[in-house]
Image 1 (tube, rainbow, N blue to C red):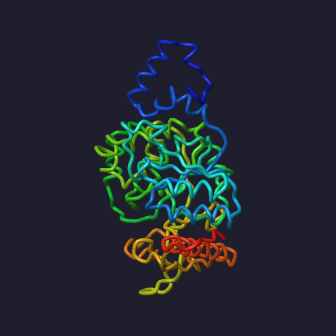
Image 2: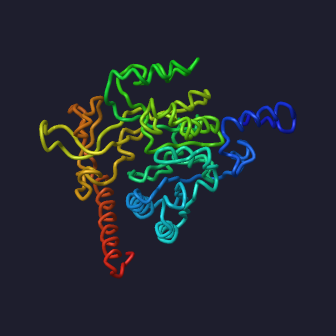
Length: 377
C-alpha cells in the first residue's frame, strides 16, 4: 500500500488501527523513533554507505573508509553504526568524525528499541540499513574493499528495477538439505528464484554473501523489515540462526517471505589472490571476490591480509582471480583452474595503494601507543 500511494490513515480509520496493531506485534522496535513504518520511508533521503563497526572492527573500517575517500575518490556520505556506548569507544568515534569528511557515527540503540532487538554481532546489519538516514543504502562490511566507487552499484539495471541488489556467496559444502527443508516448512509460495537457488538444488550450503547489500527503502521497505524481524533477539535465537549462518540468508529469505522483488548479481563468489603455494600451482587462493556485470573484479571481502585471523601481518598477493563452483574451504582456493584470470596493472595498483594506507595506519597506531607524535599524513 505504501508503493501504491494509498494513505489508509486518512481513508479508513478501522483498517489503519488494524495495521497499527499488527505492526506493533511484528516490529515493536521501530516505535522509539517512528510512529509507523510509513514514517521510516518518509524520514529518509538521499543515498549513502552504512558500516557496522565495533572496537574489534575499527582498524579494518579505518583503512576501508580511507580507501574509499583517498584512492577511489568517492565522497558519498557514510554512517557508522554501533550497538551502544560500550561497542565503539568515544575515542574511535571521534576519530571517524574528525579524520574523514561526511562521516557520522550513530548509536543504533537510540533509534531502535534495544529491549526488543538486543543486538549483537551480525544482527545489527539489516537494522542499521533500516535506521540509516538514507533512502538508498549500501551496507558494507568493515573488511570490504572496492575496485570502483561503491555508488556505481546504484546504477545497476536490476537494482533500478527492484530496489535491491544482492551478491551470491561461495559455492561450498554441497548436499545440505537443511536450508531447503526449512524454506518448505514455512513458505506456502515462493518466487522462481527459489528453484534456481543453490540451496534448492543442494549445490551449496551458502547462498547469499552479505558483505555488501544494496537496498532502496522507498521501493522495498517491507522486505527489509522482514529481514530485520529475522534478526531480532527472539527470532534469531529460537529460529533463524539455528538454520543459517548469521545474517546472510535473512536478506533474500526475508524478501521471499513478504513477496518483495529482489535481484542478485548473476555470478557466484570468486577468489582474488595469488597462485597456490602448495598443491596445484595453477589454482588461485585468497579472499572472496565479487564481479561486476562486466565480469571484472568489483569488490572483495576479508580485508587485505592473506588471512585476517591467522596471518594478519602478511598481505595477500593480488595478481590473479578465478571463478568456479568448487571452493576448498580449508585453503581458500578455488579448485577449478580453467577460469583463471590476471588482474590488470590498474587493479594491482589500486590494491597496492590500499596496502600503503594500511601500513601507515599500523604505524600511526604503534606511535600513538608509544606516546609518539602522530603525523596524520
